[in-house]
Length: 276
Image (tube, rainbow, N blue to C red; front, side, top):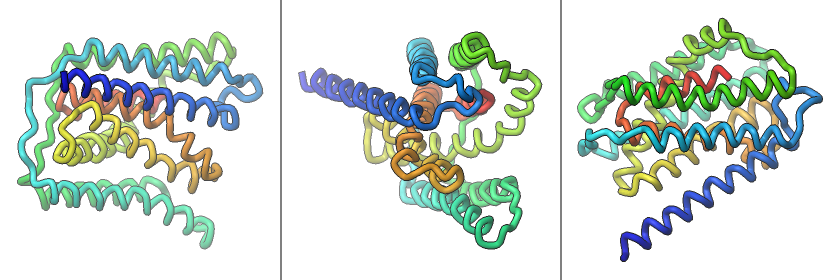
């Protein structure tokens, strides 16, 4: 009976999470619609985007089976330190980047900041290598489910924009180039930080995987507040609301990692999502 009540409560928390993120995104979209749509943008577009995200998510949840691999005990203090160091750099680097551009009008390539981020992450992982267990196993069946989940999302988005709005925005060549360029950064980089490190640390404190996925998704989404507020100059409230889309994607990526215990699937899905 206690277990039933616990599952019911977690179910309500998940429902509240999905509803809140959806409302946030719809409110945000009314002021900041998809740029490629121009004057043809409408409030219905937000519903289509959310539908694409949720259909893809529920497909993955339905067909992606859980791995039998289990988490090994880690020294959470060390992993938490790595997580905090890299998360602080990710946040601070964009703010510093913006201040330098404004004050000194210096042209600092983003690739430079990304390379520094990778160096910090690699050094952190090497220092604590005895506590690190990065898994990149691949099973064809699971990879197929993840790819199919993306194709559902991508097909809805591309067909809707090209057919309904009559905007030919998608190029296979550009998509392939974007996928290759974005595979290691931000996809793999963020998957190590937000999925491996963050989920491992959270699970040391919270045993329920459904709550763990929600928490890491919220932190992942809020990280994008930096991009909205400091880089894109969106006002404070709408910067928070704008994080809803990334939070829902973060939830999907969390489900992929929890089910597979491998970084490969999430990295591929993440890099593919960034092509749309």
